[in-house]
Image 1: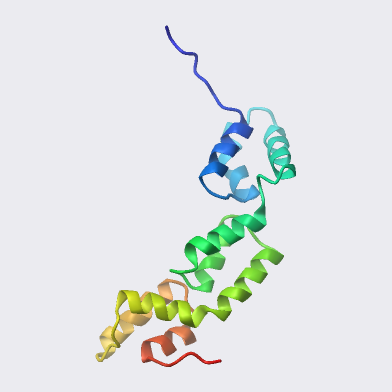
Image 2 (image 1 turned 60 degrees about the horizontal axis):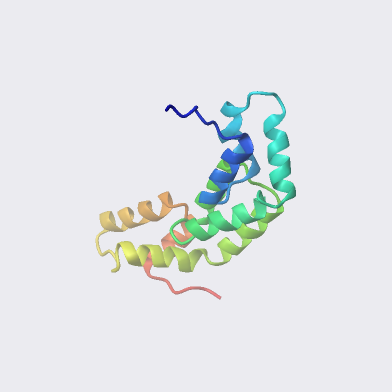
Length: 152
């Protein structure tokens, strides 16, 4: 006995994605657009999910920051938020919070990777490149690699 090919609805597909992690509305639109058969069907499904608070851009911002802020600087986190179609007040608030903790987060990432200050300029440059590619501010990177203490 053959089973008929079951194709989940757009709402079902969206719920499956949301069960794995928080997604922004823009991210869901991008991922599900290929499955839309009737124009407007996707927007309608996403409106229904948003009305029931299954889609919440504020939660998506918090989720991404929680997952990524321990390893990345504010610039890189902001880039990832923009790539997910997130912007606005929630992002601005989150970025302000990340900038306050940038030095301590950079110091922790550097400590886990390298542990001891570099004596050789080549190695110091390697440490700086590593932190810069993680999205940390150049001034913060310089202070961390030089071994400065946090400023109040």
